[in-house]
Amino acid sequence: MDSFWHFVFGFSVGFIGVIPPGLLNLTAAKISVNQGRRAAVLFCVGASLVVVAQVYVGVFFSKLLTDNQQVLIALERFAIIAFFALSIFFFIKARLDTATEVKAVEKSGYKLLGHGIILSTLNVFPIPFYIGFSSFLADRDLFKFESPTAHFFIFGACLGTFLMLLAYVKYVKKFGFDSANFARNINYLLSGLTFLIALVSLIKMRDDIF
Picture 1 (cartoon, rainbow, N blue to C red):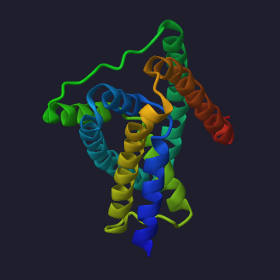
Picture 2: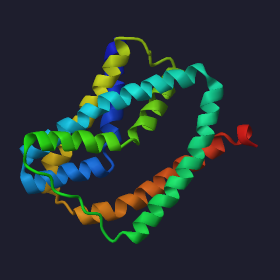
Picture 3: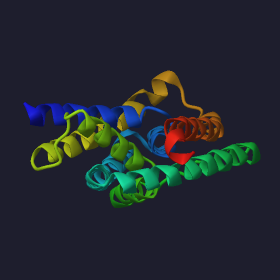
């Protein structure tokens, strides 16, 4: 039963984490429109494979931080500064960029798979997400770091990410796709999101900082 719930938690965080439009979603949708669904699926497979490593890293650091509260406090202070900086960066980028071009990818299966792997590797934002979520569950005795339960969580997150990307691929033509408009607004969304995270974290830690 523990393994089942770890899979459900992992699937949920992987699925929900890819719902907001981002680089991977936009690229998968663009490939689907320009090169067909099969090409987009290959890209999604490559992108989802990297999630295994990202979740593993997130779970590892979550265990490390859970065992060492002083490291956790120091990291949270650093994260507040980093998120404020990212908020400013994304806002400036949104103001300067009139549109973000999501480049087309060659039709070669290996190139599509490799492009998905590379792009997902460069997208490091999910790692703090997995750290926070697994730590949240661990604090409530809902997450176990040992094998095989943790591996069910990792597998669930990978599958959830893949299915959400497939949803973008499948329904992009049905609901219409304006990559320029999505890409233009994503930086504003990220700016607001990172600012909100930094602000909430600052309020939460005000007693430790001051």
